Every structure is written in structure tokens, then in C-alpha cells.
Length: 193
View 1: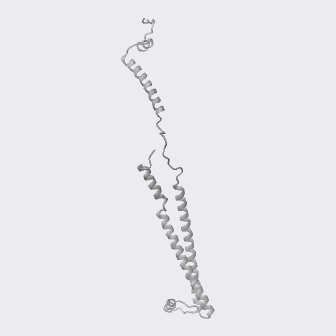
View 2 (view 1 turned 135 degrees about the horizontal axis):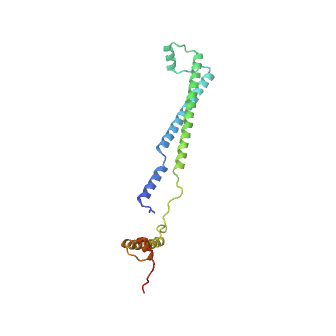
View 3 (view 1 turned 90 degrees about the vertical axis):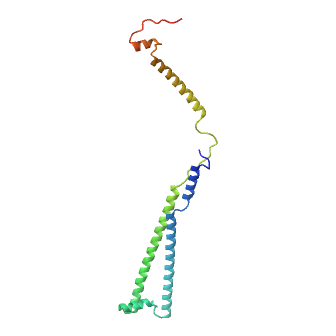
């Protein structure tokens, strides 16, 4: 187990801190959403202003005002500036603006979905199940188990070494060794007094 000042613990805490902040991808998606919302708001306010200007012009009985560059461009191309053409132009312009608006709304929804997906993936990817705890006593190795295992291993090793030394010396101690080493049956055993 490691103390709070251990380099691995400090590095892990630093990585958790850095990962808990929003990623650069999330930040860029947030900026894109804000830019798109500002653009939609600007277009919406411009559309409202144009509709209000045309409504005021119709209420006053005057023809809706067209921008001067459009009139000059029509003269250069040779198009007459009739009311039917201006209405058709405004309808086409309105249709284009609505299409752009719908496209922007779709992009905003897509960016929001992508942002939510990134947030959800980040939230479930890096979650701490159980925080680390400082131990109160030594968990491993247990001294009793180590001592008992050491004594048992020493006895087995001592027995193995004794048998190996007897076999290597070639000294005959038991009757079965005569039968095994020499291949002669033992007829009589004499015991020492």
C-alpha cells in the first residue's frame, strides 16, 4: 500500500484531476454550439426586422423597399424591376433563408447530441468505484504463515539432504539396500548389541 505522498498516488490524483476537466473536443463543441446559436439569433432578428419593415411598408401603401445594390444589379443584367419580380425574389430569398435556418437548427441539434454523447462517454469511462484507503495493519505477508512454512520447508529439505548423502556415499545401512544395490537376497540380519 502507498501513502498519500507516494509518486504513483500523486500521479494518479493528477490524472484524475486532469480527466475531470472538460476535454478540448468538448470545449470546441460548446464553442460551436454557442456560435451557431448566435448566428441563428442574428438571422432570426434580421428576419423579424425585414418582416416588420415590409409590414409597415404595406400598411403605409408604399411598395416594399428593395436594397439599392439589387436594383443596380438588375439594371446591369437587364432585368426590369417590377413588383412581381421583387415578390418572387423575396420568396426565393425567404426560402433560401428558411433552408439556411433549418440547416443551422440541424447543425445545432447535431452538435448538442455530439456534446451530450461526449459527456456521457466521459462520465462512464472514468468513474472511481471505490476510493483507495490507507491500511491500518499489515495485510501480507503474515508472520505466522511465513514462519510455519519456513520450518516445514527446512524439515523437508533436511530429510532430502540426509537421504541424498546416504545414497551418494554408497554406505549400506538397511537390508533393502543390499537387495537393491547388489541384487542379492538377504538371508540373515545380525543386530548389534
